[in-house]
Image 1 (cartoon, rainbow, N blue to C red):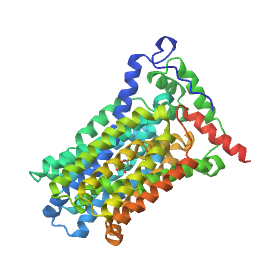
Image 2 (image 1 turned 180 degrees about the vertical axis):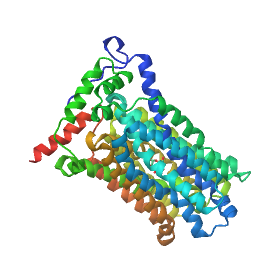
Image 3 (image 1 turned 135 degrees about the vertical axis):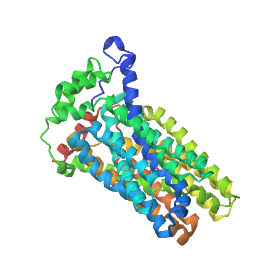
Length: 463
Ligand code: BGC
């Protein structure tokens, strides 16, 4: 594959980005990443509100489960539609609309007067989560220079983990006064910042090129610091666009078929290896392992959340140096080892702290690999003409598998016990390792167009 054409960031006199252009790139990335923050916050905030909702709305178990799970249903619908919207109306407009949705429905869920109103609002919040989970990494990948694309797209994952953490602490603070309404309404603030930001940020130059707005695409690349390289980068995008391939069915060609398989496989493995059993249920898991009080378990869960944020920063620093494959392989291998230890600790009835340390190790390895890198690869590997729709397929899989695992976890634990449950997740991590080793290509430092040509070449070689 061709080397990427970006000059070192310091080479201003040779057409590289000026410091104001560099600021623009990071500002754009940070603002768009608010989509990830809202994703993390809005999926997690419900856990702290649950008990109060039950009393205020007089909910039965089934009604409570429905109120909690409805956002995941919304996310499934949202991620299914997001690709179409992003391809049709553009990445920026879709993200802007999502920001409005997040703000409005966060407020409505906080002001809800009963179960029906609350559930409708949470369904739409979920739909926004689904849309944001697609458009945020997509937008970041398309505007980022190849050399630092891994880090910029992974800001999305960083924002997700920060959102989860903030939700946890907001819940903790507001729980004392049983103020569940503000738990939801607080999300209006980042939504407003996202809206304001998106009003000023540029559309993805790659989408503009595809939609035929050449001048705006060129100006967009320039605004994003490409300097003299802007024209060359645009021409490269145009070359790929000029390929005859059209329509969603190009995913069935040999090369793109592998890309589809890689995206869907990564989506399944990110979820089926159990991350959200830890994110959603860690206090329960720690209690089961013998933690003395609910309070201690909740605090330990908070520490796990903070570790998740910190390790994502480490991954961001490494992903463009060590590559996607390396992080995935180390990550899945480490997760398998950590889960084996969690299983052994439960099997031997060791005290809670053994489980806690092993769970922290598991989070560290997830946060280095499968967490950020899956979103990154899903946003990199698809051809430009159908990038949004192909991502929809993969991200629908993320949400579908998330729903399956989170929805069955407690029954599985009650059925086969915690030791076997975590060993099953461990075996799935080993399968994820093999999958990454065999199928996942290295995309570090390559332009999105080079990645696309790689698949086209792959198809041609098969003919
Ligand atoms: C996953 C989420 C998970 C989060 C935890 C994300 O990459 O998609 O399901 O809750 O990481 O950090």
